[in-house]
Length: 474
Ligand SMILES: Cc1ncc(COP(=O)(O)O)c(C=O)c1O
Ligand SMILES: N[C@@H](CCCC[NH3+])C(=O)O
Image (cartoon, rainbow, N blue to C red; front, side, top):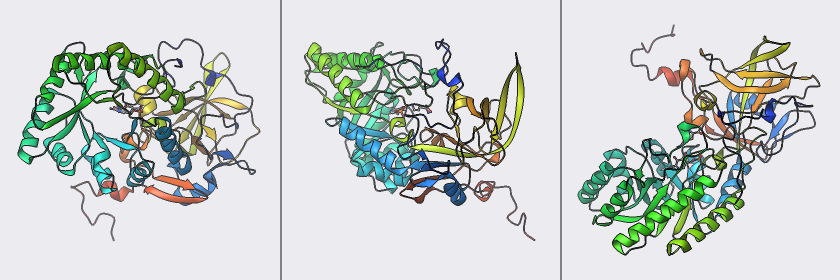
């Protein structure tokens, strides 16, 4: 199995060599392979085209900032994951991006769906997603959420704590139903990613510890519980991970736990879910594995470990989110102001302010995540200069792209395109500074479809219970 570099597009102290995206390119207009969704290319007129439309045509209809999903790319990726992991169940992690249309695309492609809140579950059910193909996550699921899951027939509930086991026992008895459950375990794997998105080390909130013994206790307790149908184990080690060693260690530790459970009860657990977290390319330094390579590698690991523990191969699942939705999305912004800052030693940095910012992409501020950007509405013959793409919010840390070379004449009214913006951008967007959230549109064969409309100031004002309705009227 391939062993990739660690940290990917997230700044980590461990990254020592200067990243390639800090090397001045000969032509800043080039669209680097691997960063853009499938139909993106520069048209003859120089503007970027997505789904058969130039960005100029797209923004004429939807404005900026906007998230643009390349429908063919998104649906193609979903299908690729399902085909690559053919004997596995593939759950699309809806937290990366969900709306009713996306839920239907995922359903049509034959994938299952991972939801982690009442909101995500509600969108999925309202979109008509088969509840039996939904897995429910969360470290603090409320009675109300569990009730909906149990009454609607959600396929798997991934149990995260002893309190939740008790809650499920009470609710299943009350409702007269059984719940198919997996136990979320922490494997102690230190995933090589930003600490905020690593989830399998011991000192964090998710799951039952294998090393501490709580995971085995939880499994045995659920096994003995008449209304709980214990199906297996769930492990998720973190997100934006390139180094597959972590999955290997997690597989070994979860299978060892399965063999301990077999020793204790005589029963082989039928299912193992290895979670998501597979890295994607945000900059030219990221080289993610293909779904086919990942499937082959994970299969080999599981088969090897099952032989070693004398276990039958369980029914396996993965839960990719970012690797399906991320590369399919491009964010478009309009440049509003620029300024040059002297860095010393004759160096300059050009600040390029756009009409969005940390409210539509919090990842750079939250994880020091790196992104790329290009001038999208035209090509420029001017020399590339070191630039920083910043937003319009009242924060010095309101950075969208920390370091990028843009043509020196990039200026007011130009459009910037940021690739790999389909995951955890809209889904983590906020209304900071009372900023309405951008729309999400899909494009395909020259046609634009609104998936989520642009929020308006009226949407925001409607929540303000203290406002006089007649404000602004004559
Ligand atoms: C339980 C679980 N499954 C799947 C995912 C999807 O992760 P990613 O979008 O990085 O593939 C996450 C998010 O990290 C998660 O918490
Ligand atoms: N939100 C994170 C991923 C982790 C979320 C799920 N555990 C990101 O943007 O990378």
